[in-house]
Image 1: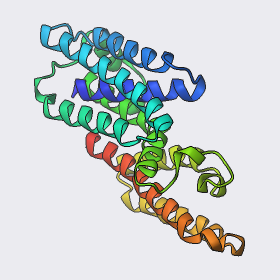
Image 2: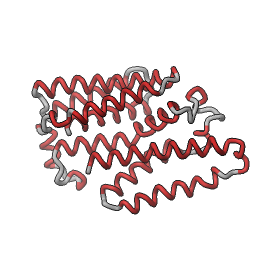
Image 3: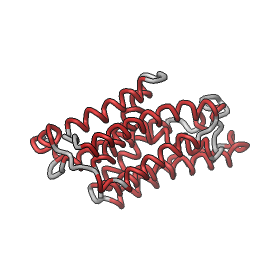
Image 4: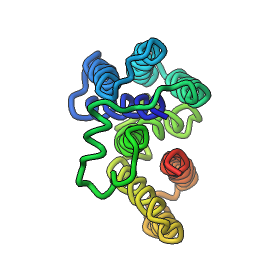
Length: 243
């Protein structure tokens, strides 16, 4: 599980850095560096683990570059392929990963944070990665799926013709919504998590029925449904990894 956690952390850090300081190479460089440093702190120093750290760092760099070029070229399927291939490979190879320990393991054991109580260093890495992915990476994934399915045209993203500008606050509400679902799911409150999902639909319903937007109502509805389901899928996948 340590490799899964490190990959998720690297992806999450990369997208968070890009959201704060958009640049060509810095975000993925920071993400890759965090993967390597965390791996060494977790005492993942066996030859197999060191090779995995190098591959994971390369996967993070590939993700960052693919996302930037994918949106610019209109080929959103490329970063999606990079992401899904990396995740599938790391899940299949997870049993070969060494167990995290070292300085990171000692910190997790000594940490007073209730959320880390009873967790191993492996579990802490996965938890950190899942939480980070719910923030900016979840939004990037949603936008890529919308672009790849032509639900939204990347060339018009951010203009008045883009449904994202009609349904305000989606990029802020998405991370909050996913974190709510994740926290409620981990607390065993699955029913409460479903209420959050239903509440979003009720809150958006008046906006989707606005008479001013009747000419785009079908496009807006498709945008809302596809984006929402993909966003929920990110949170539910995180729950599965932590279960």
